[in-house]
Image 1 (cartoon, rainbow, N blue to C red):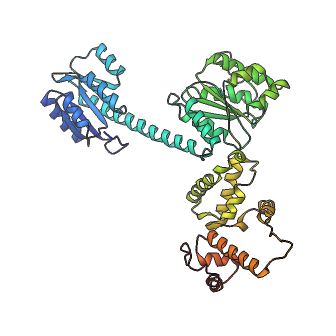
Image 2: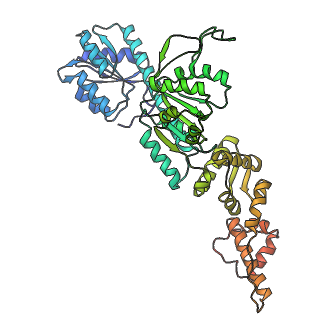
Length: 471
């Protein structure tokens, strides 16, 4: 059965061996606007489930044709998102506990009260809707953070993806290393959102952006009256991340005092709020990141050696963009598509000579710098192709030597100037046609010619019959 999110959210399957109960429930639930199907035993129920999706399964326990608890186990094994309410005339605590353990949301005893049943049905369907909504959001976020900044087919980025796949479903502490702008937080988010056991929040904190006197309270929280301005107790990031992931960006900026406190949390998973005495225990996965060389910082006694080893359980190194320049065309298209969608623009692509510049640039700001450039180009261009003149002047200035470094061989015996010029003119026309995707009017514009003049030159040089050319 292919389950969908909302197509049958209000449909209910009633499974009971008593015909009268099936008819009564079908009528009562139908009056509430639910679509109801019925089955006399687990076998009939499974046949219906193979072709139909139900928001809720309402099942008896003791039936001549099978057991309701066994039905729950069989259905949840095949379709884990299924939601159940159990009905039985044998209302014992043992059966209730057993039903809840294998996945039932509620337990109704016969003879049932219709109002009690309707409340249970509404709650169960709401629970399922929230579960499906959360699953959809989680998948969307997973895709988003697996995509942005991790686009590419280079060996370097493939290695990062493989590492994420290997590490995501563990609780081991991860240290992400790399230059500014390489996408360290994106890797951290991918590790969190692909971890099937970490359903709680991803809580980031930039250790370098918060003043030292405030960072302790930010991380660990504080009690009322702990310091001037602490008018109420406040949870810190560690408590907010309970059950999830705490991302400590720029961890190399921590002061020695906070390094000691972080070390204790890593060792004991416990801390006290600022101004408090109560020990708070947390279940948090720590992912840290830095653009510093922490090993050198340890040697220079700027970073605690014991904390470094606690953080460096699984080290990640995110490669700089200059180490994977073959990914630039894919990143270009990715960001063009995204900004066209976000800004309402229709930029088609980048010219060949522009792509040459993009794939040769050193990108000191890495993917962040690249993303910002594409956004700027899209916003200013709005439609059409991004051309050479659209690039920032500083990029054009750096690329000019490479763009014009071609030299013409000049043998001692001399050359046929007319032939060389004719050949060079052919090359220019061919290049312009290539940059213009075969559109002759666009090629003429690139060459600074009238379209008629270009057609005459192409005819004279026998270039007019190229199959790729378009008007």
